[in-house]
Amino acid sequence: MASEAIENYLKAIYSLSRESPTGEAGMKSIATMTGVTVGTASTMVKRMAAAKLVKYERFGGVRLTAKGDRAAIDVQRRHRLIETFLVQTLKLDWSIVHAEAERLEHAVSSAVLEALAIHLHHPCVDPHGDPIPDADGKTHVGRGAALATFAPGSRVRVARIADQRPAFLSFVAEHGLRPGAKAVVAATGSAAQSITVQATGCAAVTMAIAAAESIICETA
Image (cartoon, rainbow, N blue to C red; front, top):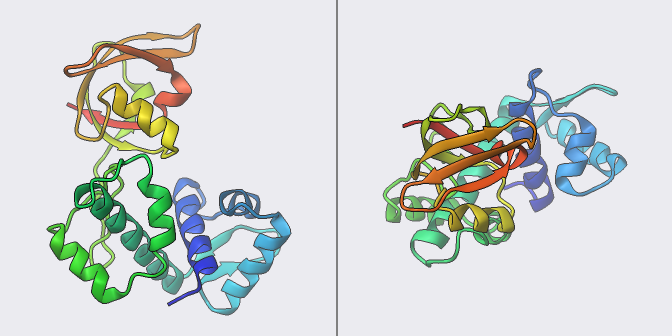
């Protein structure tokens, strides 16, 4: 098993590379996501390149190798299964389990992980809607778009919450916008850069377009 620090870098590079049109993660972005300086990130990436986890050229982007990709997916599987266990079995609030899973994911053995998967009946997504890789590393990702892109009158189903800071998750839950919830886009305001949405059984709420970018939805 890789060290905790390397696993955190693997997760960061995995996430950033999938958001990048080039399939690479920039060094500055890696440093920001892992909370270190660019120099520290560069040193770690060189170590990872020596271990054949990433491909890296000076002044260029960072790309996971096949070995690094498998390792990153394994960390994602551990993290998201633990989050699911903490919410479904231990009944912890979904707004705090990300941080708890960050601490626990590095210590879980393969045997315990598979026991968790069986106990949870092999879930496909975690409480925030993120896909959970199966034992073979495959994910079943549904299509979706940011809530901000839907026109007034659209009926949507919340699929995933991209911003997993506790305050934002509490806000989403308060207004009935957890993954699986259905809602209607009531209005958009281009001048105020806002959107008004009403989840089933809840009062309408107006939020900034920037916030709505983090709520990923599908057409209901």
